[in-house]
Image (cartoon, rainbow, N blue to C red; front, side):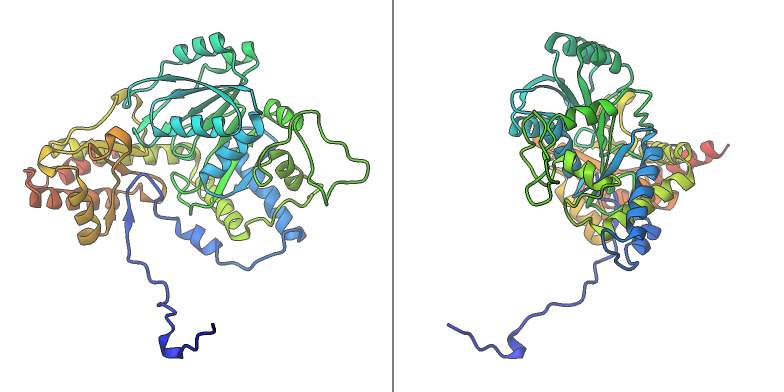
Length: 420
């Protein structure tokens, strides 16, 4: 039955006009203005020589960001999870052994993805708020002898960073490939892919790279690329005449098949999907911003913002969460005071009254800690001071006594000491 609707009955909604926010949760965070501008430039066809040159530039830029010489350093279209799925789905064949050390929510994610693609997954676990000694992981690798060791570098759910240096030696002894989820760390703390012997690393733009979610920079070692090539199959309709697939089982996902993605990013430009043009522009500009500042300078800016925030929170009488030696600089966990219940009213008033977003956590930490992010464009003194001043006001309104101006004063002092 056809409905005759008057024009006045139709609802086209209004033009987008989002409220201004300061995003200081665990991600996404505020985007660098240069990145937003880059996303507004004109479209190009995916095989236009100008565009394929931009693809090549992206590969070179992210080799520098990842501190690697890996040729296969490219983008997977989708949020950071797309990069994780592409790596694990392409490296892990049905029946392959996978070892996942879990120290937070995202270790459970790696376990689930590895299991979904047919991996036989083993786990070791530690209390949320801590990490594993490298020796413990190395010993487990030698015992299990997995095809893939999959672990998270920085788990924002617990605000902890797992040390990675020193794992490669044990993994080379057993022929194990190392996959790392670096979503929360790329651009924020050192990630030395080649020096640490990492084989596949996936990240996203929406955290320390301070871009929009929707593109996942990934880098693959030659060892990883060789493992993927043993499963390489080209889809029907674009196979060259006389083509024969590899002996290994095809990757279960077409979209996340790294063998085909590598053909698309190679000089062959064998069609796979239509590259997400504006997101490639964004990823390119994110890397340019980070590299122009200098990796070490960016790491120090993240660290300084974190030190100032934590000094302010501590001066306000709040207790930080987790092992102090392994806290990630990009996200700070704060135990919610008893006076504030599960902390949701404080979060809501921070957002509604001051335009600042902070996060809670997952699982048994939900309603127990707040997570405050200091990533990318957010890592600037005015943002830290604004967050602390606003939090003080909201805490006082919610029954938690805070010494006046204590957080802001402590943060000022931290910045002054860093300036010498």
